[in-house]
Image (tube, rainbow over all chains, first blue to last red; front, side):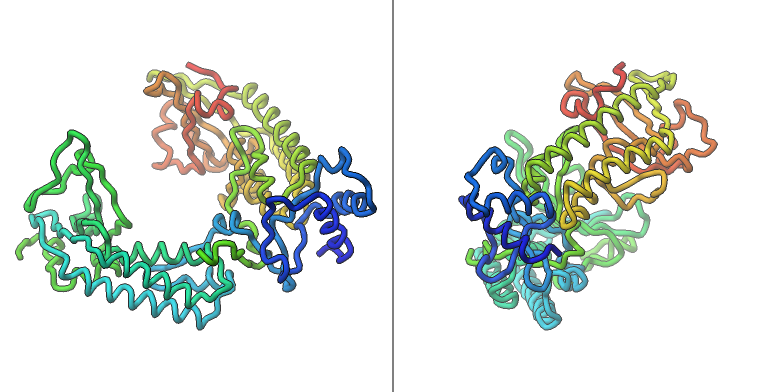
Length: 275
Length: 207
């Protein structure tokens, strides 16, 4: 940690150099300083603070304190760097406590988030079930079509609001956006657009199934979208194809469980088909 | 969004989790250095060190590259690992520049995104510093390159880096390329295009 006087000189130098357009996070609340660039900058800063006119030396300006340090010694990342910070927000249908703890979230906050995720998934299942109709069933694949609906937007806004309430006012937008994106991905049954749930036998692992959510768009001048009863084999080559978090195994991933309950997807495992 | 400007507060020991593209082709990416708050003199100093290191790496590869006789169209190349002493020297020199130019607060982050990775002493695949990856651990890895024609008339350079100890005893001929990922494990594989990624492959022979 640099001694306090260096910090003061550094700040004085920035004041002279001008702060135009420069983002300083919560400058009034956090005691901040430039990271690194210790000794060389301190001498530059000293020269400027002593009243020198801006010279060639200030053209070689010292580092901007883009990353600040708060009173507790934590790093304060401005928005441009916050969005680059790598962390895993969710692990299955729970928050990833290890990473979110690093970001300063309390256990109580994370408990609340887990509840929010659980409620959102339950609601997604309840809302998705009536929107879901069987599309195709054959020996190797079962497909349901899930209609998009207008309530999806409201649902997302609700989850977003609730999430931000839980996170509180001081939380970073980077955390909120990442969490919201991952919750949305989990609960896509509340989608605004039609999509397909595609369960098929794994082509590579015997006894395994692949669970997939797929959105198809016709190619200009290409095939019309599939009709009920059509196989999805080779669709990647025929349509614009978007797959959302595919997953393999012998049972559906957590985000499918509410929707596939009682839908007889198990018949694919045994090779039998039926309704 | 009301919280758009709220910063992210994290402990200092996780600074290396900030994602940065510290190389732009074969050059230090000055914009990214500025983004994390490095000063111009420091960026200039580090950029010079990177350029010198890349220049020496290209010269070394040019001198060491061997063509593997092949029955297929294209070209097969092998660049043996450099002398460990040379590699350590290269690594230490750049590492020292990172230490000084990034300063104590940013050193860990810049090292992680630029120099971290293979050296003769560190044979684990934890680090993925961009300069380390570009230069095959500053020359500490055995490098195999398959050059094939691309659709647009340029050449595809598929670069496979292998730990010297994994190569132990395996005959270096055309057949080795089929063994990667099968009987022979490799560390890292990247694909460059001769036009788009000239910085990474322009010093190497063309078919």
